Each structure stands twice: as structure tokens, then as C-alpha cells.
Amino acid sequence: MSGYLDIIFLLVLVVIIFSKLKSVLGTGGEDAKVIMIPKEQFEKVYNELKKTAHSNENAAVDTSNLSPLERDLAKIPNFNKNIFIKGAQKAFEMILSAFSKGDAGTLAKLVNKDLLAKFEKVINDRKEQGIVAETDLIDFLETEVESVKFVSDDKVNLVVKFVSEQVNLLKNAQGEIIEGDENYVQKISDVWTFEKPLNPRVNNWLLCSTKKC
Image (cartoon, rainbow, N blue to C red; front, side, top):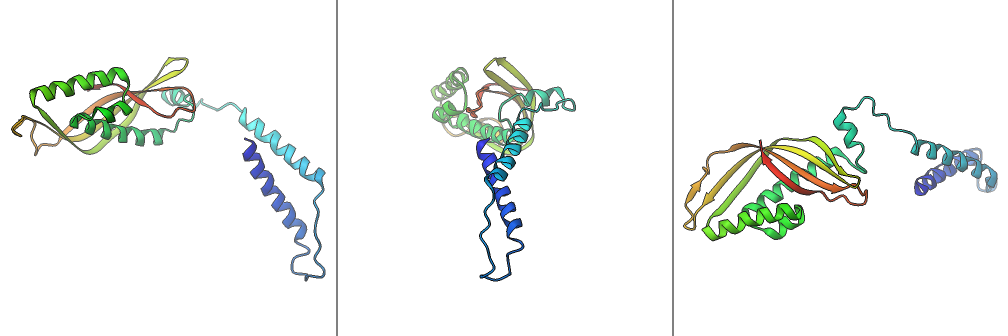
């Protein structure tokens, strides 16, 4: 807030100086004078701006026109729905790719410990059976936050529905397709739940559960 006020203060200072110099500019070097703005004038403007900014900062946000979901989202510190949606789509793409390739290292950065253990079990089972998974994400048809759940005083979950077009294959050790069709694009609906501490300094959402709809 102090930085914001300082910027406003400097802008006001520039406006005052230019207004004082208006009668001097263009009159010639000999007639020009150095204008000194009284300290009291600056302090008065600064104090008024500080009072207004403080009032705006503490003003209650009007949520009367918001839906229940929007009101819940407004309770999450530093939350921007559009930015979150873009990040969720990127996470979806990365997790899908990492799970298909058996990349547990990448998954560990994007999902919580419980879900990571489940993913690793599937990955290890595939390796033991010599099965290779291939997933090609074609496009997102829909991505929307469906609900908000405040798990505790310091954690929040967001349930997100993804509708996407994908090509999914399972191949055996000989490279033969045992499940799926490489020429068939599936329309798949997934519901994923992301979790994050309510701490405004933490912006990293982790995937904690998945299900098909």
C-alpha cells in the first residue's frame, strides 16, 4: 500500500509543479523562475490520499450479485479464475503426459503424496506386464470450476471438470495395440480436485483426486 501511495503522491507532485510552471514556460530563460511548493501543501495532499486509500482498502466487497460459487471463490486469497483455468489446463496436459510415460518425477511436482502413490502403482504394474501407454491430448472442449470446498481453516479444494478430446492406446511389449484405436478420437469427461493452502503466499495447486464422469 505504501508503494501505491508513493506513486500517487509523485503524480500529484508532477501535476502541481506543471500547473505552477504553466505561466513560466515559454517566457524565456531570463524570466523563468524556480517554483518551490510549500511542504504543508504536499503533506495535506498526501494525508488525504492516504485516508482515501485506507478507506478503500477496508471497504467490504459487495457479493450480493454473485452466485454461491463466485462468493466462495472470492474468499480464496489472490485467486483469479481465468489464470487458474489456464494453469489447470496446463497441469492436466502435463499430468496426462507424465502418467502415460511413467514419469513419476514430474508427477511428484503436480500431485499430492496420496495420489502419487496410486499413480506409481499403476505405472509399476504396467512395467511388470510390459504394457506401454500412449495418450494424445487433442483439445479442451470445456474447463470449468464446479465447486469449492474449504477443507479446514487453512486449506481449500477446487473441483474442476475437464471435457477433452484424446486418443488413448495401450500397447504390449511387441508394440501391438491391445486397447484403443489410433484413428478414434474420444470425448472424455474428467473431474479433478485440486488442493492448496489458503496462505496467500502459496499459489501452487496440487491434484489430489481424479474421476471419470
